[in-house]
Image 1 (spheres, each protein chain N blue to C red):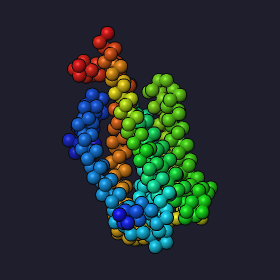
Image 2 (tube, rainbow over the protein chains, first blue to last red; image 1 turned 30 degrees about the vertical axis):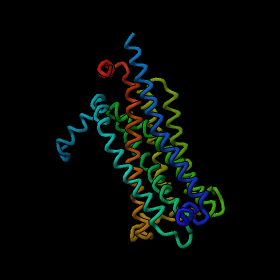
Image 3 (tube, chains in turn brown, green; image 1 turned 90 degrees about the vertical axis):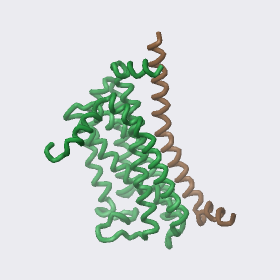
Image 4 (tube, each protein chain N blue to C red; image 1 turned 135 degrees about the vertical axis):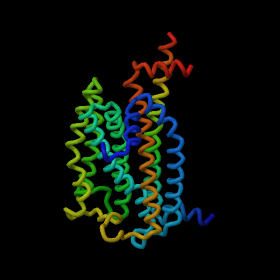
Length: 52
Length: 253
């Protein structure tokens, strides 16, 4: 438990380290999710158009 | 073509065909994701947990495991974008144009990450979020170049014309790449010199170097995954009236 607390404290630099990692995670995830959602939506609209 | 083995040539010829590219990348994706997750897990475990704290910078140096790979990627992706743009410009290969423009937002993201994590590292170490030194300024210009490419592409309706314009802008901007790389040697900067790519011996301990290289490799795989996702979407948008798209959709029903 103490070990885990120490890990998250990052020797007093927790704010700088975890903000860096968190922000990176958000930006990298968004870069995958956005094009995938856009493609799914586009495929759905194409399928709908073909049905008519 | 005499130096390149025939199967490799055949592979690239087939990959340049949109329906083949679309189907092949779909099958490839799970493998890429598995390799990426393993590399990232190993890199983060090694970097955040196993590696010791730096004797000067304490634990704050751990930002290096995303800062440096991101900065490397920001340069690498720019070169890929410019080369793909040139191939599209010369041979008018549609998929090269798509690879070029799909790289831009990913490159911009890595440049943004390199700048912000650098700032978050600079604050506790240098006592300031930002200085106008050569390394930081040239990296900021790289971000503007990426944004310029994205903006220019969006401003031109005909996407084949847009790709030509974008390729020329990307090629002109290549001049900035060596400036960024050598900025810490050419000018006196606050930014520290290279620790890994020094010619003689990297001045970094193995327990820190291995996770750094793992993260660099993981970001390479991330780039391929993100690039393929964007390229597939862009390809579909451009080829919406092509027969293979219509066939694919009617078969999916």
